[in-house]
Image (cartoon, rainbow, N blue to C red; front, top):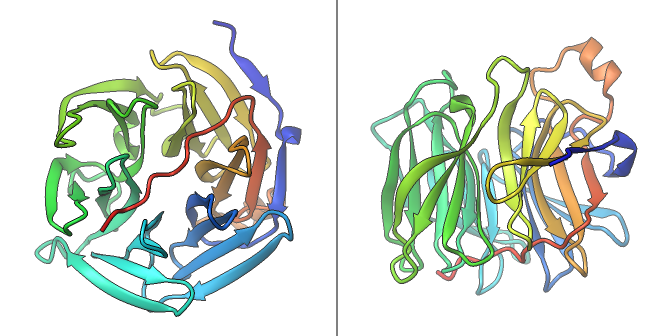
Length: 299
């Protein structure tokens, strides 16, 4: 397969911003807007791509991932808590706590599966390469279970169009893993490496999404690129960004053909920021294929 290279000119900055760590974009088809977060600034954002308006909601602690909730609002992970948040009222209710005995760990990324459960994982906030994290699943009845241990920096996840395969990133194993999904229970099995990233290549895998053709789009932080892989793990295209730290991506827009991309400026030096002043902004790319509508938490 010939790898297609897409220049940074194709990636539009739709919201110039200075997010410390922009993350977890999720498209609401009902509201025709994009929710996204800034972890360290403790903020949830709501972006309207038509007006380019961006509404900010301040939270009392770091917010580490966001997903839609079927009954309205969002389900979040905070530092160590699952929570539900209503942007209309500002109400925030914690509904589950993890890892009280692991003080250095915090949640990182999370996403809902097609059955309406919320998968979210943890990482060692001081030693990012420590195998200290866990992947948790919160079911609609708010029962929390551990589905993977010894995780090294839990990050993005996604599901194949038929829901039978789950993809999962461990950033500092430099890998995306695949699991078989049991359709009735949602249980995961047959963990295997879907793709590996060269750990000496200057980038590591961060957020990801899956399109309607079953191709996986994966952010490479440090390289300022998004890689699209076919269902066998073969690289199909590389999309360049004008910033080095693209963190996560999702499909949105009326036809789900806009790839929205968040970015970060955390730990960047003044010379690096001068060279990439749009770091922390929100970007959009007109994709050649539609994405999948984000699944919502049914609890």
